[in-house]
Image (tube, rainbow, N blue to C red; front, side, top):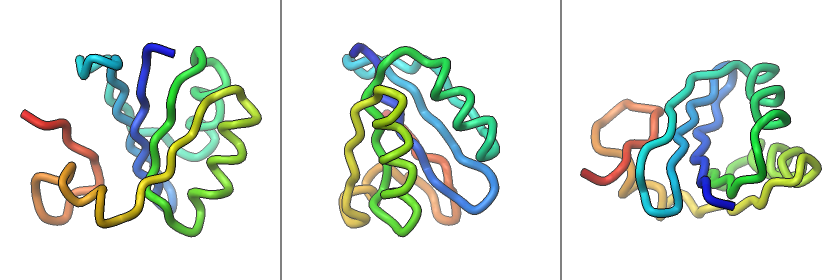
Length: 94
């Protein structure tokens, strides 16, 4: 596993941030629910990181079925990744 994918779950559109294990940006994507499932099914095994929320447990089980490793993060630990107010995209440290 050489990729870490941060996922911001939302009602209709999910924000994805893919990075190498060394922190180099690989991709940023904005996907609908069906697109997200399809993208993850086609993506090589990766570590998927999500904020623990109501739908995160469902999506974690779905990602495990696809062979990915999943980590759920408590909301208070997600806050440092958000650089601006009212943004849903996780921002990398700069």
